[in-house]
Length: 101
Length: 278
Length: 112
Image (cartoon, rainbow over all chains, first blue to last red):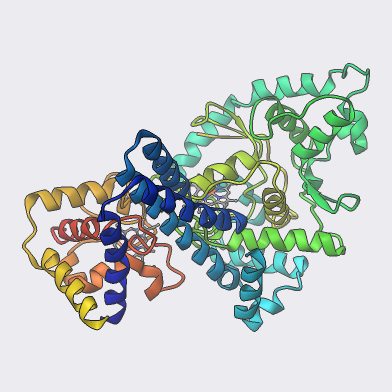
């Protein structure tokens, strides 16, 4: 049960936060928060295509003045980048398990 | 930031991972080929160059039919013309390679002790061009694939021989390629080995997954789905995208090292390229 | 924190507990058979799948196979947590599918 609880919290929190009223400033802040995460993911050679797509959508929405979408997409980009960083970190030790012996 | 991650990675490394830091290509080769030979006892070593066609009778029949009029023939002829043509300075590709570039494809990718980097045959062709005042060609398809088709054809049947020299940089490149091959990446969380080792011979939707052993031997190849020729890096890019991972640059260290590791695991198998795929 | 967690769980469970509608099942079918979504048939054979793969086990009689819906959810959410060497993608953990989409797939699979 415990992991499921943690999972649900993880899923519910960003959704709850992104529902809050987005402004030009808050959208810009989220985009600025996402970008360094994408840079780290790229430096670890594990950027995901949906991460890049989400950031692009966020920036397009920001240009169009759709700050709610911009904020939500930027948050998704950051979340995906963080997931890929975690994956790359774990793989640094897990990859040896895939070597046939 | 990067250093923090490196430090962390070192901290969490298991003793097993540390032990594997001392690369041993010869014993890796034995284990790698032994794994497939034991798992598929009916398939002889040299037959692995047939990729997915050892596993599906219907696909094999379709492939044999395609090979009666090889769709790469046009590229091969074009590649030969390009290879033999003189550069504006009067020289040609032949002068850049041992044996005039004929029958040498089985030795690539090759470690270059001068730069400390791995050089694929495509990158060697581009180096030759630059040395003769010409621009680089795209490494994935087009004229480069045609030139590689011709050069590879002159090596057809020759034994792949990509021996990693006892040089720390060569061993590091080999190890980086190995780690890349076995590391899961992308939103879908696959390593190259997930599909081409663990699930080799199984069906991913309609596709039979080619085993990693022999997987480089038929490149470059004509793929009907592409409608033209493609090099090994073109395939790397496609397989990266499939798992939703941003591909590397065609001439990146990551892809050079990956090609180095992967090709060296097919040492002893015959070159079977250029190839064709439905 | 605990009470927040419980509230969230309570907030989610009814989705699962309610009887599946035809629309849920149809949405689940679409997700299970679309490459860019669940893509379940790339690896699993099940009735109605077209050109299915065989990397994972055939999914039939799924209610008997996995009677506990919470376990089914966990398999789709993060199978690598149960089996680190699995080839099945962690659909929930890596945000490939939303919780609603996972529940739709479960509704659909329970008709198989």
